[in-house]
Image (cartoon, rainbow, N blue to C red; front, side):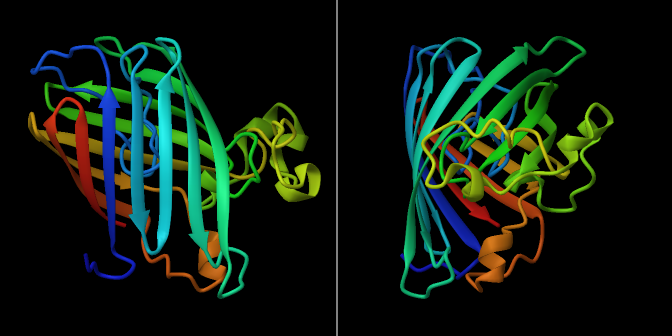
Length: 256
């Protein structure tokens, strides 16, 4: 299949779950295999014990993810990514494993959003390492709005001084992941929620039970890929359509 280079992304997700009523609007999956908008996370959770698998691809990058709703509020994701030229060597691709955790701190109520805290790539090599706090609110029956603050890779676009620096000045500086933890495999405690922060957000509009439109403002500047000349980062805005032929499958196409 030929796509416009650097513009289009594709995803396919398969979900195994308990029975869901047709009128329910299930949480949508992101290109990272987690519950989210397009690349940014949301504060929602899948059904308890849901197991999903996903493959996503754009600009020669590929991510294969498996996500499990471990507890009603806690989800975990294992991801295998193929990132071409990430090291700056034309012929070299990086094959990266990463793990995510997200915990929903509070449920959505009539007036207040659901709130979750998450760690992306929290014990890997650090290529995708990010932390975030995010809130999601359903408006009416077919609109969701999400907003959050993030650190690490997700804090790289229009970043600002870490507000947690008001608690401890050390929070304003983020050490290098590779210099501390080498090739990964252990939790990166000294990095969590440190360094510059950035804001992200987006909306999801359920056009009908089978089709959802998504738009987001991404806080990932893709700094390493831009520096290596893999592609140009021209805008923080992403758009997409997600198609759900039934409750077990999801297909998505996106303009990044």
